Image (spheres, rainbow, N blue to C red):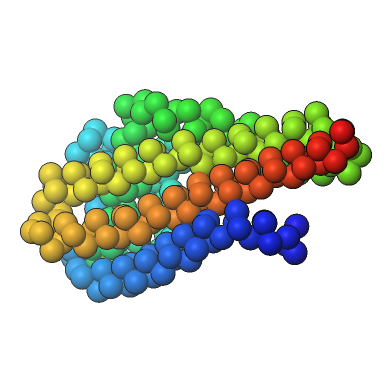
Length: 231
């Protein structure tokens, strides 16, 4: 597969976007990690202030290991911030903390795309394990319906990346509004800085979706080619 030029044709857009997203994240997170927040409040303090303002006092905030491992767990109602965000009083940390707070708020108001994503997670996790085997078995054994079943399961993974996009974009929009309402960021320069940090992170999800679509189109083409040869 890796030796097939056609594979790289489908994979290239996602790979290039991924590299672009990583460079944006490194550039903007590093830059705005040097810009302090008002009163020197850390990412953890920003999240606590925003959560309490929305009545989400029961949501716990934990420190998590790993670089930019920040996430919100809707099952345990825990917002986990990487140590760089949790302990740092910077504009970048505030933006990331507010974004994760946006996810907690989505959970509280039953935001449909987030609910949908949560529902399909178990199916996607299962499909990720069995889809490659069904797809390869179908191609090798010449059983086209089996290969198509693998494609459908791959499609569920692609659907997950697409559903993730509105969830992440909405969380970033909420983050900006929450920070402005709480007067944690003020002025065009700080607003622009937070938006750059959040936009850079959003590009990683766009790259993931483009990559998933490219992979799906490639394996669909493989099945069509195999079916044509066997007919």
